[in-house]
Length: 216
Image 1: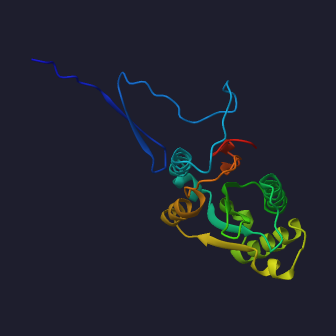
Image 2: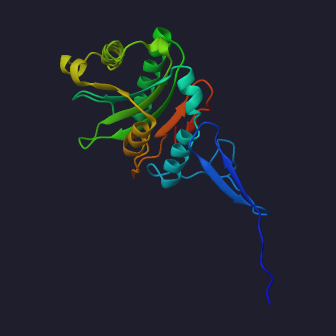
Image 3: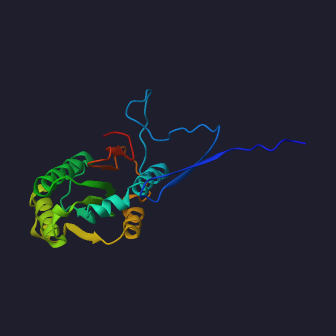
């Protein structure tokens, strides 16, 4: 008779989050997340992989929601598009996003965010953001106007229509909606022939992380 292989299972959960992971005694856990310090020659990663999507959704699920609510934090979804004249260089687009981040921090204080760089059918780049903001950010209406005017200026004030329709800002009412938004837009699987950083998260209490590596 063969002996039963009895293994001990360990369950770990993120404090205040919805993420739980199980591992078995004696099993070796290996990281699948690429770092910037590994040796060898890296190939471009084409698009936003399943692994990238899984890592980003795990990061969202590991957030301590109770602590976030205790500090009266709010969730804001943001869409950023370009006018008819748009940059082809994704690095320039990310510099635009960085400029917007700096404006928001100067006006409202520190915040955290998930971001995603995607491609529209017309070939233009666009961003999807999920912001985690403190009470200092004020009303959604005020934030909507601030982001619209800031993005319009950052992009070069190319046309008045872009001021009116270049951004979309909404408050996300609950974590279920935040997860749905992230799954649909921020963590949407996508293939591309270009290698560059396509998504990430960062802010106070988080580590900036590339969710699709390649050329930066």
